[in-house]
Length: 96
Image (cartoon, rainbow, N blue to C red; front, side, top):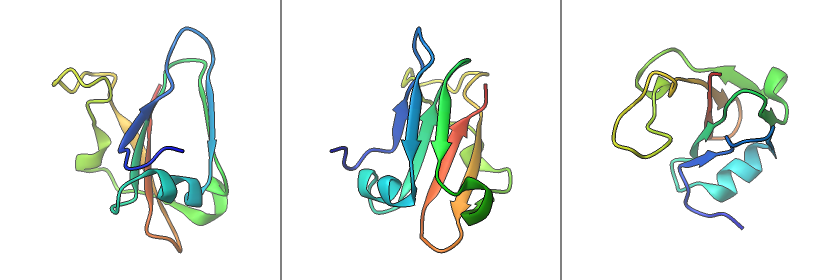
């Protein structure tokens, strides 16, 4: 069980997949319920009910995140965000 995380990076050498819903996100994150998901080409991020229960976040400070933890926001560390319509939760997925 993952708890109190703010980011997960599924990038690697093979196509990796993560499946989650709003309750998975809320259980894994801290009290702000925000999760950044890093990925690269060939990876898949499946978020349950993304087309119906999530609203895109307006561009802003959350659009970049140092997913690799090197202290620098690199050009490939750009994210698109979504907030859940009924739960207090936000997910940012890396743009590939």
